[in-house]
Image (cartoon, rainbow, N blue to C red; front, side, top):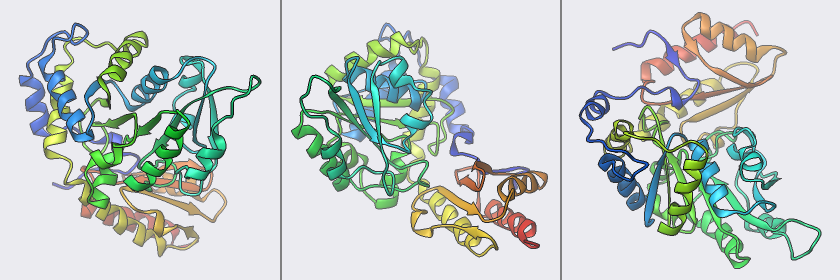
Length: 346
């Protein structure tokens, strides 16, 4: 069935599938704060198994998952090392500083991924004048760098440097399944050397709400207390976890379709006038391109909206488009036709 509106702003806009809605309606529930929701327990166990970890914790969002992970693994006054373009540093309202009382040390990177050398240089030496490095954070896939991915080996190399210094590692894997599908590697390989990992079921996996944090049982026990502290203790939340279970059972393999659509969109955009795009960075379901025309980005957003196509300007000259299950081949062609029509006179 043709979509009236083609929405390429984000994969957070995915709608739950009929199977998810049915599972939500039938979910067996209990009070999760009391540890009595069997559907939540099942989702957490499934998630931990996929990540190769001992336990999991269901949360409202990826932002909450990152915050809980940071606070549970640091102490006030410490410093966390992360990429300057990371989601934690740019899009989480300073939660690590406000709630965790930790300082962030952003490092500029080429692709969004810290190198072992950068981590080694960023970890603080023992000195009474400076903060103690408490955590290293890695993001995979990387949002602001256009869905770029890093391999399990790259994560392992960074973790080895951090662990030699006694510093834990957190993997912000909001779109980790996109990386796993793109490389044909199991998620547990990406998470193997991270002390904590979070992923979203509400993006490409299409569940309406939720993320899961995984790690050791001891870490999850601390994380559960932090979740409660920030107001994330939910009650009969199995009605949401049920959709997450369907997401893990049915929606992972199809992510490859989103990647193919993103590549088709990127190739088409590359042929347009006054558009710059690095096709090597289009590795999963995110397409970022730049407009070499004053006011061009706003012109594209407005022109597409008038044609019932929604795209997102992430800067005065940059556009981000994200493919997902509610964007099909025909939608990509509609978007390209609209962009071509708008730029024809440029």
